Length: 311
Image (tube, one colour):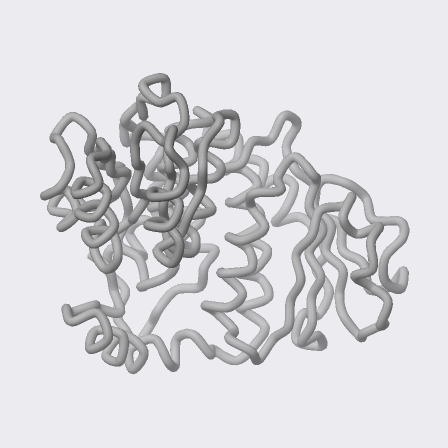
């Protein structure tokens, strides 16, 4: 197997940060060979699943078929205290740091059994978790916040999709598309199939991380599109995934992105990120110009060193 994208990630510096599509392809390369732990879901009747940003979204995907409660760092303690039948706390965190140790410690203090889903074998939060409840997933070296291999691996650990199928689909069906001139647009509306409801936050966060407020975006399911989200017309590109968009936006401002037959969440994530990367390529390098200064600032906020490249 050719690991050319992993090789790019293993050697890049702040002077040549790769675009997001490299991280997507490298993740698909990695998971064709790296074993994934199996998360024991059947030990819970009603767990509280806690994460921040994309980690919270990942938790919703992994536990979507369970009677689970979901929370972030902002409301986990309130839910722990107010919902009596929570029988365990699952913390999802790529680094196992930042808010994760605070959440795990507090959950343990409140008498709850804690599990940790992470990519860091030395995660600070593991101090408050029994060893057999720490699930460490493999990851690639990536720019800070890209978090592509991190959360894709966790999702694959649940869905057990074949990453080779997604890799081949991107090559044969996405790379062969005629993309519009993305540089013409600073507003995008992504439309996804209803079964991928829980990917919405991940796509929104990726836009925020890469473009801040320079580029506007909305992400909704094709069913929710029937509500009042397009009352005010805007010069935006509508990008639909998996289902043809025959209703929203001007006909020449619609882009359809196919999905593999029986696509799961990992394929949706990979292809969604891959399309966001095509937008990234045709706009100024907002992320690349600011990630170093941002990590300096956020290191002070969290009180520990956060590097712009996550080894």
